[in-house]
Image (cartoon, rainbow, N blue to C red; front, top):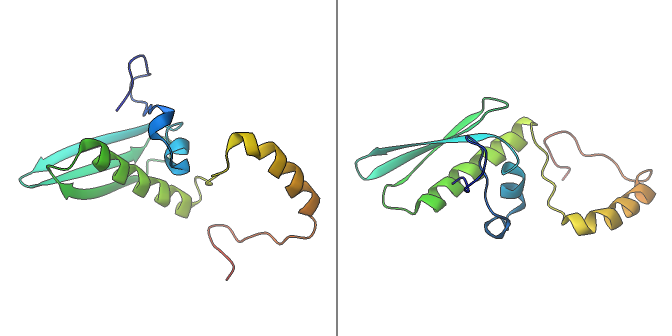
Length: 120
């Protein structure tokens, strides 16, 4: 999945195939993808080089490679978020400045969420 001219071992996806904020953040990390075909099934493993966290997904072997990789990457991203190694920032960078100013104004009145969880 690496583009031409990208560093070896780096997952470098063009922005037009990264509509998902999770995939955008994962594209900045060093991730290794391993594929094993076993009959009608393929096992895809995604390994984060920084943390050593590894996830595996099993898919039909005739599924599109892009979809297999995306499924493994999304699972890795969710595990990184659950373990506290990554925080999902799904804001558009152009909107970040305006929302940061608004957040500074309301910072004193809001309660902080617990790490890795949500208040219900």
